[in-house]
Image 1 (cartoon, rainbow, N blue to C red):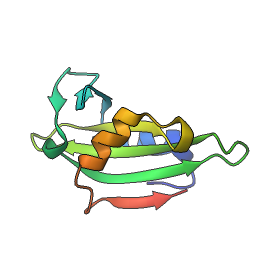
Image 2: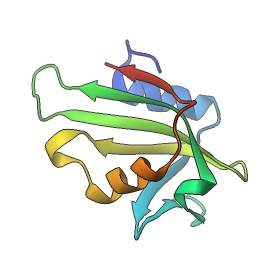
Image 3: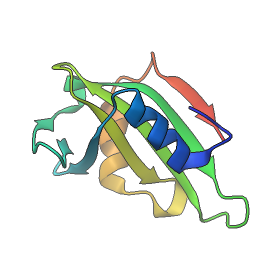
Image 4: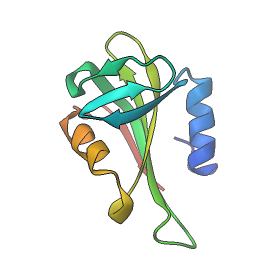
Length: 106
């Protein structure tokens, strides 16, 4: 992910690279806000993710995940990092195999 442009720049770059769907996590499944399709943790791979730490506000931390499903759906999932993270997202992502993901801490 592009460390110079921050979270919004990374999302824009990922969209240009084909990660166009916007994912959310509810009831232990990943859901595409664009198509309504749902995926379990074993149905997706994390291609890359980056953690962004707020310079002026330590509470302003987030993680951007670039996710690809086994049927070819590609999109992003954004979550807060730390105190404000969504427990449902954390639980889901802990179950996803991300060993091949590119990792960047910003």
